[in-house]
Image 1 (cartoon, rainbow, N blue to C red):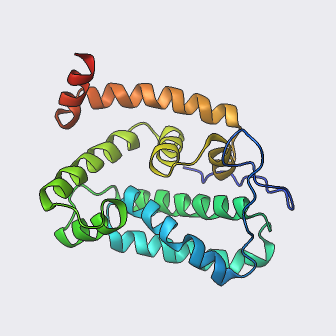
Image 2 (image 1 turned 120 degrees about the horizontal axis):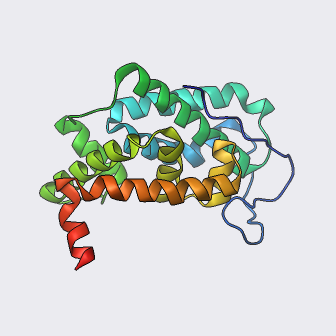
Length: 208
């Protein structure tokens, strides 16, 4: 499966990636270390949600920033473009890992604790965390079954909170394509989850 296309990066333009409105001004990280400090936790959390393994997420995050340090002199000075580059690189590494190792079915207890630290409440109830993690595992499984074109936009929109323009920048596609994939992907995901025992009660309550 081919990697995500490299999004075009236009140097010196204001950030319009967080929505369809006026540009958002974001300080530029002028040193590689500043980029690391600003986005390490963001990329680690993103990788942890998708891989359900802290050790794998740490490996992906480390490799993402290794590549960022090498590529830094040639990166656009635009902060949104750099953020998109990090997401795009991490996403490609996650896809590579999934192809090599498959997707996780069981999550070790130590990873449960660490995942709770990074992607849930800072001090969650163990039973609530276990239930949440199982739902996340099923949700990841359901989304992954839709294929990369839908998985990527759904995860970036609803897990990471990116808006349409920024998702388009990350994936190297048009904003209209992002919107279409979100629309179709949500319909497909709803059909899959409605038939899954872990989510059936929610869909039944919604229909009452």
